[in-house]
Image (cartoon, rainbow, N blue to C red; front, side, top):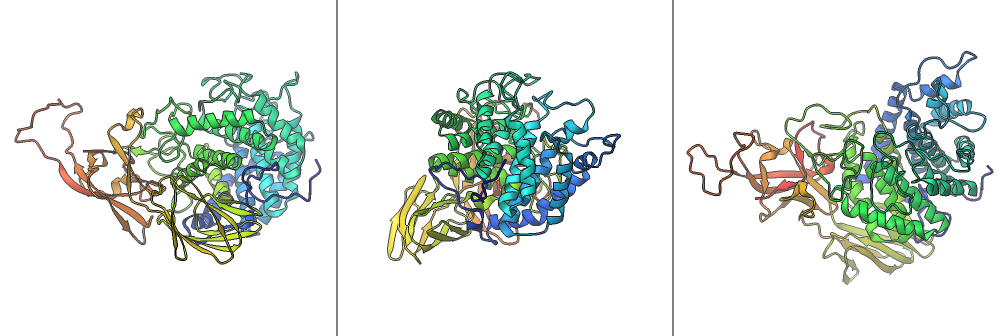
Length: 635
């Protein structure tokens, strides 16, 4: 399809139809290099993306393309390597590269991009189809098993990679490959006029983004058809049923978060993208109800989603066991992306609030301080004696996985992270995530200086004039703003709006006292326990910080005792908390009789008073495997 050369959007999600909020261009937002997120972006570029590329070579994901591109008359030699969706790990890494080039202009990967574009051009079928599993495994046919082969899911990630590379470096080779594939997808149906849908939603949001990039309305129409067709039980239910594939109810009727959590969240992001372009209010209303279910009754305090290991799925409302949390990293990323689209659609602060929660907790915990090891699932408790580590039951981060969806997903999000901080128009700028950096709308640029999320002091300096809107987090009770001699009290949980002129400087103070949080009584798994937060950060107690002979399981928090904030240097995190409580003696038997009387046995051991340390949940397991818990029993 022809490209609209006059319309080249630069951010990770840029609606064509006017939305409530308008994203900034990719290079109009810059995270301060020494800020927590700026350092993460640098680590992502220097370590995570190269690590992904190394493992994609080692595991055969790139070779899958070479064996098809180089096949002679006798067909491809060797065997297909990896899971049937192995292509997507390469595509997500390419997307990360596209955003990183857009951010810095680096030429580091130019030769690699040329090689991969050539391989894909040679591999792609004449009709536009491209999938190295189906094309490279004897007996496989396109869309013979759409419930599990992930063909449209893979196509979606290729499309998103191509869009990122086009926005980041004006690369037309990948975009041409993607448009040929999208043209094929747009015409795809079951022979009776019904579009073929995929067992793993994702192509919906990719098709919308390709429409945004090219102006070709067939891609938006294809996304609409995918949304309309889903939920009619057209896929084989398999061992986990139609819920697993998000094929149990039509999208507009499905108002409870159910089934495979990543599929649910990607589908919701795609449906919201469709609403943003066609204005179908029935989709927005359904997404608002679905969001209330997912974030109001089924989300962990860390911003993680999915409590069941069996099918990587949502459980019942309030079924949130901390030790059995599946909490897949990809689900937190998908939730972040959906919240961004809901924020663009409505401008409501609650969506940015949950983006921040996930980013600093569930997503941040996924990556080691080296940038080369990752969690697939993210429990909120790890027991003493837990042995081994794998993607379903981790005790420490691993360098790679058999199902390696999470590391490249992390890479693509972090490379584009500055694109999610602020929005703007010719009349003003809106700050949604309070990160140090510079953010420029057409008439107003603002520099943010802060050590947030470890400190609540934030200095905003304006260049230009217009309306500045700043989200005041819901936890920031007592927030104030100072401009010159004026000091204002700010209401938390919403946006503070003020007119600024060139050179204006505003100091925001967001109080960050440590806070004890209790769960709804319906979350039975943590009844009688409290979590500790400070600002947007959730804290955890790790075995590495306890004295010899004291186990995490022995700790009971004293909620009446003061909590001390410690600033530290040369550590994994600049902030730690000192808590107080007791360490109960371990019971001599698995089940001990309970008595309401006072123990008088000479052998009884009294609890020991103890002060102990809590670190941000995002930093746990960087000192090796060991027990950890977020929810602490109270005295």
